Image: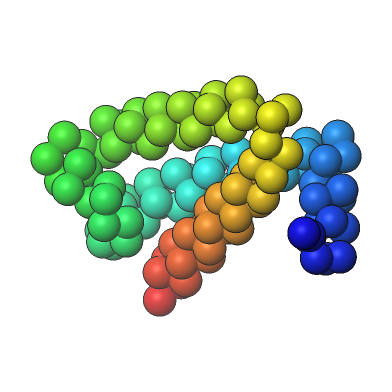
Length: 113
């Protein structure tokens, strides 16, 4: 049994425009995260992502971006394959987009301090 809010959210996330905005936001915020991370590292700030920090320290920034890009591509591929059978997958995209936006905000705050 679904709650009314869940039905409304599900129907809004299934429109093509909403899906395009969610994907565009996710990819855009990922790009902004990479840019703000690069700027922060150039200014000798610390990498905030605990998963990426060891990769950057041992393998370098370019390898870390390659890992991040590959992980994003795999995530997008898996979710795109699932989206017809599991319409709720768009909620996962939406959450990922908000998490990416939070990472950009954290990077910008670090750059400003």
